[in-house]
Length: 309
Image 1 (cartoon, one colour):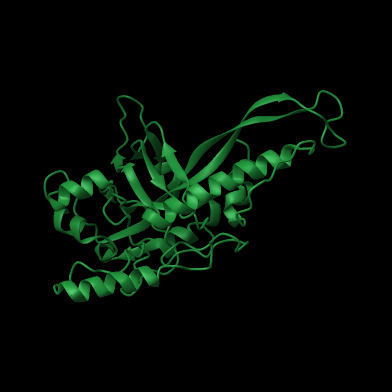
Image 2: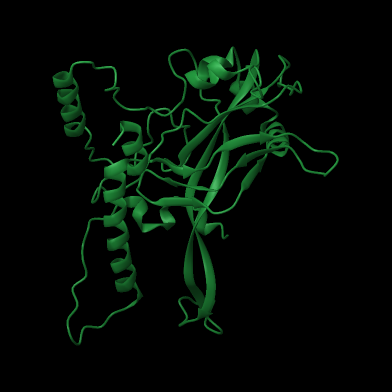
């Protein structure tokens, strides 16, 4: 994967271009940009329809877990991510086609070495259970679920869309440095990047850093009031920021880590138990992973079964 393809702006959908269909006529000369614009139009229309219908979230799979180091097999400690599919905030499908992992100890050591532990120091919180979802708080300490530590580094697992350049093929030279034997990319593979982000941006009782779930309509008992709230939510859902024709980087959602690609999709929260040292050191307790605070996008079939249809 090239470094250039990791940049968010390398995908034309990132700036949500205005929907302009190409018009062809006999005798009209076409170049590579015309074909790229045609592809961008169709991708953009489908992506916008998907994100407006369902929003970003997990479609299927992508369960996260923790695997401790196994000295017998030589396997390092890992945060595991199962195969699955998510929709990002632009409506692009982000697919993890095989089991993936993040090396937890390597990540921790790299953070210590990178800034002397300052990021980990700011991401370590007492009573970290307040930053978990209700389901995991209820299950913690029962069965195979580890107990909530008294102090932990809080980190979040994100997945984001990246494009991988593949299949170099001969082409006309495009610059002064490839005049001979010029080649260019013939395929772009829709791929992904997993990120583990330390939440050093000041979580507290009033700011958990978790994705906003949206309006809660289930607690409205009166059917007429619930219908009215639903209609108001639909009318208030449109935002000009990040829609077609509004060029420029889309604004990050509430709770998103600063300086992280705003299209990255949240998957899980990870608690890494640490000591009160400065910088914090791992205390050897079990790592806790919360899968339930992400945004889920259930299929129509699941929703029909849930409602008893």
